Amino acid sequence: MIADNDDDVPLLNGNDDDEQLITPEDSQPNVEAIFVVTFDVKYGNTIEFQMPEKEQMPLNGVEYKALPSGSHHIHEDFVYFRHESKYGLACIARVDTVKDEDDGSALSVVDQSQRGMRIKSVGILTSSIIHIQSYLAFLQTEARTYLNQSSADYDRLKRFLLQHGQPTSVPVSIYDNLFAEFIQQFGASIFPLTRLILLGKRILLHSRSPIGSLCNAVYFTHIINQSVNPLFFVNITDLTMLSNEQSYIGCTTEIVFKEKTHIYDVFIDCDNEIVFHTNDSILRSIVKITRSDRNRLQKNVTLNSFINIGNRLSRVLNQLSQSNINNNQQMTKEKFHSVGLHQRYDRLFLDQYIRIRRIPHITISNPGSVFFPISPCCSCPSSN
Image 1: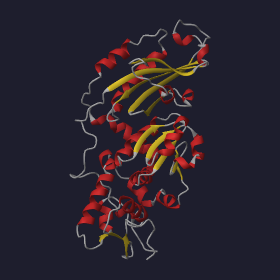
Image 2: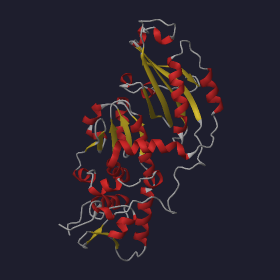
Image 3: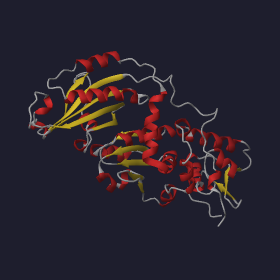
Image 4: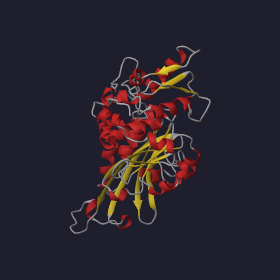
């Protein structure tokens, strides 16, 4: 076995060539609709208010995206989802109702239509996912407010839609806490997840409610490779759509999806610990957490360096490929390090990446300094 020092792989904290993929100049997306969803024991999830009205903008199915299955077990959550060509964000609030002491408030009376609880989801549809997180605080406040509101008064929501029909500038700082939560939840698993995204695989994250943290994971990882379709929260009604997707990342509370192996390349169970499931032997190796991954986690992973991993890798490989078109160019240990990869642990991933992207004229050196040509025209590993 060849000795190797895992600690010699530098963590790339950004440089002048990195693109600022999230910037203060980016604006909030136009809010095109606002809605309130509730649960009724007789009718199930229902839209109790929407603007524009349904004749102008049908929201069929939004009631099931805005209140994912399992929401009745939690007190607060949020969810991102897709509705046709639009992006949705909804904030959920739930409280148990009691009838022991009637203090005159809406929550002191058991609403028989809601099985002894009240649950509301207040959400929006927008034209873009960029900076949609900036609406979280407002929607969370409104969801809590409607729990305590006995009469239907939607004037605040109507005013909000009218005032936010046009975008405004948003500070990047709103992402700091969300990104920190993402790192805390996934730990070193962010690196195999990143490898899957760069390979353009079909990735389905699963957990029981709350689902908001997985929606954030979808958001941050899809920026790395924007050719991957960010589906965000999906449920059983999306099964046919998922069967036709070539490359996506989404999340779900439906454990039954684990059995539908034809709809994903990798199923990631995030309930208690992060566990990757795949039937692909190559991907089973790529999703393993390496010592290099664990070492990188000990260093400061910044948001901009993380979301620029794809841009940096593509730029270095294309420059290497074009540097001398008549000869295969060597991906040496130093070049591995220049993109934050480990020469031994990340060889298989890089081999797959070069083949998928069809980048010509590159050879990959192994720790023993033997060079293996990579042919982008052949899907079979080299046997020499």
